[in-house]
Image (tube, rainbow over all chains, first blue to last red; front, side, top):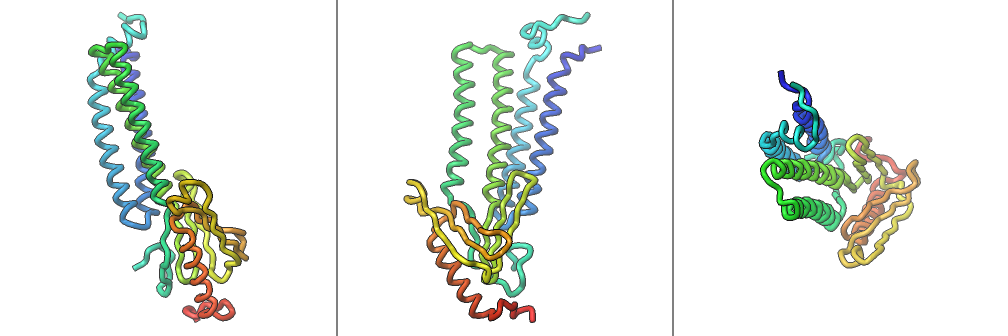
Length: 81
Length: 180
């Protein structure tokens, strides 16, 4: 069974992304519902595309980190055998 | 075609105003500086601590999160900019203020309620770039309407006064002739 400590970064990251996605949806909703010209629609589109791309990039960057090594060697957590 | 939702069929939009483009430029400039600040921090950390493998990955990830946050706050600022609008029609004035994501103020003023229009251009940049505040004193519940940082405030004031004169002439006794 894996040590729950090593899953903590993933859990925090997922919570961050979910809150980000909810807040982003509010922005897109406001731009689409209350925007009075094409520029607000364009802005909503650019924001959505950019956010999706940046989230994917962040997932990739997250996956490249060796969290177990980081937690045990740098944060000095005691190993559970 | 209706430009805003509550526009009447006989109503013509004369002015559709947002803040001056310089305000937008400063929003972009501020966020560009913040991005550069993040990149500089990443570069310096890499240079001084000679980051290897996992540390480098971690720093890249933190930079990614920083850019993601900047992206969000930039568009939040742009939402505020684009949703703050002032609409002048040949019958009324609408002031729409977006204050954050869940506060929105919409005020409306019939042209006959205008008492006084003032223009304020204060500071170096507003003088050079010709933008400023137009304040409309009213006889209504809201004592004044403020058009903030709008371009060509003098022309806007002249247009509002011209529309007021026209409205008073066409609507004797402040009666809506189109709805009779």
